[in-house]
Image (tube, rainbow, N blue to C red; front, top):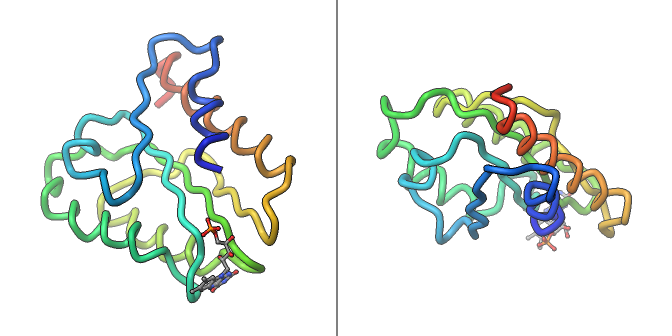
Length: 136
Ligand SMILES: Cc1cc2nc3c(=O)[nH]c(=O)nc-3n(C[C@H](O)[C@H](O)[C@H](O)COP(=O)(O)O)c2cc1C
């Protein structure tokens, strides 16, 4: 899903948008302070975000507190059959950062389908195009 989103964000129709495509464990506060928008994804594990995504959020919160302008974001979740717990958790956390939701979350349930991947590509393109035209 992340790769499809990155493909959309790198669409040749969008110029001048730079992408940092990072695993949660490799991302830090400097990336959040650098970014003009955030696409954040996680599997849903035990009705919550993955440990690595939660770790990223835990590690960066105090580092960016007071320095981050509300950051436009959208979420994508891979789940076995639900995904709503991960979204609920992320939306609560987003209020604290603050991240501002600019697109509805994508949830893939079960096997990731071509339809899911197309929606991911579209989401990446939408955010990149929105940044390019100064929508966010
Ligand atoms: C430890 C664990 C907990 C899980 N908990 C949930 C869950 O609460 N809800 C759900 O819909 N799927 C759950 N799943 C299924 C995963 O969300 C699903 O397999 C997802 O596609 C994994 O994405 P990944 O292949 O990118 O790791 C769980 C899987 C594991 C391994």
